[in-house]
Length: 243
Image (cartoon, rainbow, N blue to C red; front, side, top):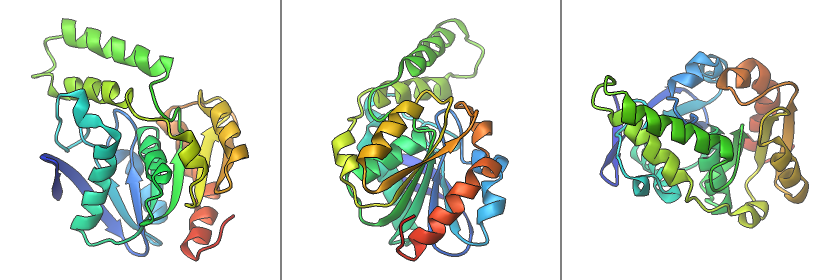
């Protein structure tokens, strides 16, 4: 399995397909397998070189145990380290949930090596939502009372990740001023939908695609629902156009 070391943490990744590079960053508690399971790899690999990353604390990547190991700059740096390691100078970016938050940080800092950002299920920009805090509390309780789950490394890392995300800067003004073409794909039942609507109205680089009746479950953001919005966006961004 290919790995890149960044800041002392091994980051697992997989590359498949050919064409312009497209980074795929999964959601919280998931792994890069979500892109295969959701139908994205089969649909996109003939047109893009897919660079799929296991975020630190997830999948086969290293699992540091401190919240400070999950700063926004470190997760963005993990993506850059993988691209540098495989010699990719520029790429498109596709992220769901946690991955969308990483993409948000990329856009807010105007990292010019990214050609476009497609952000799925972006629940929030900075500190955790109440729903995510409740998830963290339930995870903490499971660590305290369930001693049967191996050494608990994965659970402890995920809890540290949640606490780390809670310190991420929102950077909404910076993101609104980004020049990178941005597609927000949101279910109208997703907790972040109202925020996405408000942001799309004030941003010149972003547009919102609405998935009717969709909540925040990864399965509801399957390729069959998302690709009719994503593929035209990526095709236009690949030749320097904005939809």
